[in-house]
Image (cartoon, rainbow, N blue to C red; front, side, top):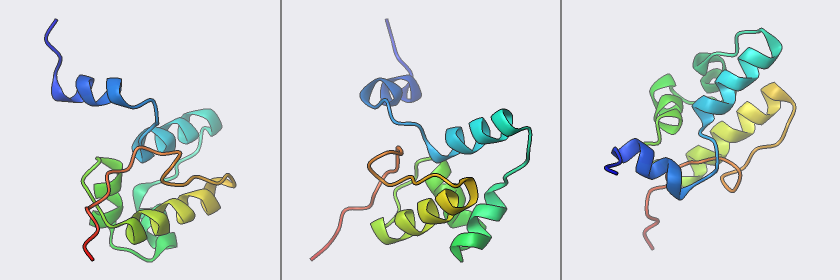
Amino acid sequence: MILTQKQSDRRRTSKPSLMELRRTYNQDRKTLLTSEMVADTAGVPLWLEYQVEIRVPVTRKDAEKILAAFSKLVDHTYTVEDVEVRLKAETV
């Protein structure tokens, strides 16, 4: 069986992405929590929030800020340990 990169990535982790969490939240509550709302709450540009959603590597600080904002909006705590977030390598 040949796996696409996306399928291969999903097999390595069972953690949901921020996009999956946000979409599930919207479906479960029949509401509209947008990426823009998360970015505004986090005080970051929309493009940065979207990078977290599509698993582009970001700094730990940015990821934590965005997840804290999402957590506040959904009234449930999410951290980089709970969500599939790609982090940039930290330099010393």
